[in-house]
Image (cartoon, rainbow, N blue to C red; front, side, top):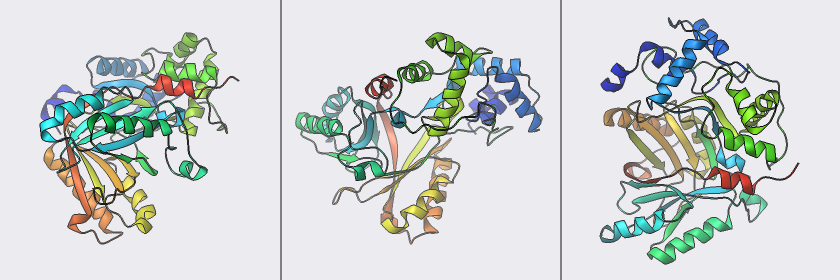
Length: 372
């Protein structure tokens, strides 16, 4: 554990960070039942609902949390996104990066350690457009707008782009625990309305309003869901039911505290990539995804002659040593399913954040909203 972070967080604060990175109650007054669940778990945590609220407020004010509330899954709201790699020559690096970053569709961009593909960025567009049903079968639909954006980047930079859309998602669960009580979490997801999923891809105007109201978090008050309801002119019960249903449908990944992992000392991240035999990907995916420190786990396409890897697993660590230990555990999990050679995998560490603006959720929600 990073010593500075360890000293900065009290035992109660560490318990709160660990307890509710998901599974927070979706009820009108959620903090008391959440605190009761923490007390019932034991571990010496004695906290009231009022103290829980105040602790979350303080952690949020200090930047230990990115926000509190639902984590919206942009993929299920609308639009399309893809991961893209490219080469920026050393003598033109800044010029190429500037051209890429100038595109409003580019949400994140990182420099990564690789002998050739040193620039990695995410393209996000509002349009959800698939060329065929088979394109929809696994992961994000293929968007012609994404292809247009990549063609424009290639024309402007003179550099080829390598599109790596998600084919299968095995895990997206960026949870960052700290040393202390309740590591692994407390699940109160059963405290909420009884709902059923709706077979509808689009949002209603009211659902769109809700998504945009909660995307940056819930109000840190005793009645956060009621405050959201008032802000969008809906009944509290409708907000509770819709958030619970969105959680069930995957439009929301989880509800709880969203830590700032840098503030918690998780400064090292390694994107491990693997050339997994296609026939064992269905077994390897769940096995790697089950490792608690793996935050993202996908199957993506290869690019012959340039990029031989079809499986991505992201790990985070609080030191270079911890990060490398976790990568080795991923390799061990892989080795249980196939004979992993040294040239079958690589680890790409990020060296610089080149752009980080976030997904333009409003545009994606607007394009996917239909009247009731």
